Image (cartoon, rainbow, N blue to C red; front, side, top):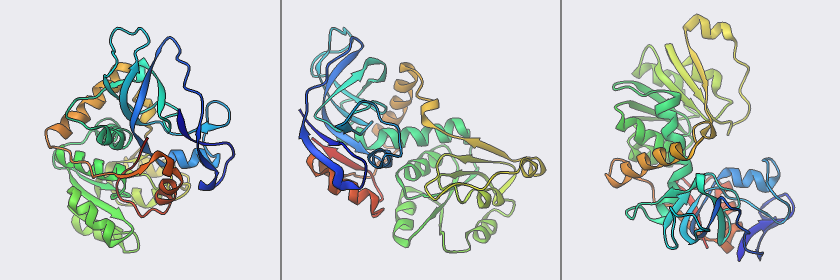
Length: 319
């Protein structure tokens, strides 16, 4: 099979599209022929050597995608031709992937391979943020950092679906337009005095802030109301300042950490959460942005485009 690989760490020049042996199935795995693969910043970090990698060189990144079963490996619940997807299976940047049966997500006919590969990681992240990290209530006002990013767009739509008012923060007017299109009620730019603008809308502060930037954590608390919450789930802008517990006590504020893998902890949970996401899409309650597609052999160009931060939607790879 062909795969997008790298044998050393570095910039996108280390990527190689080469022929490698097909996966050897373990007893608890099925073989999936990939039709679409999600590209994420985690893949860039793995290529650079910043994230843990399984196996030996040539390394294969990728954890998210969709395709069809080509070898059910004697598992009676699957058959050749079944449409499936996954959000947390390694070595996805290849024509064939060995998928542990606990990680297989049945893919409804109404959801295309391209849609599945573009919504699972970011959509499931937004889902747990809005329903577990913070249980969104009707009429709340929430603040979303990086609102035009993949998670930000889904989090905006899901929060609106659950009855919240959404304020977003982003870096450019073009990205602000994207966020408004996704349903955000207000969008401010980082170079503006966004804290003052938020207090003009909600004088006591917002109910919850979703902070994936990290370096903005102190400011996130400043615009959070008493008894409000900050959900910290990323450090795209650098490490946060240490949090003084006395500040939390004085304002009765809560800091919550968020990580998707804490919630995708069983086959049943994976399927339940994915089915909720798929149902919202099928019912028209959630509208994913059309992804930007590259061929798998165009992996270098895809990585460069992702790192340029020019994209506002998902990037997928097509074998």
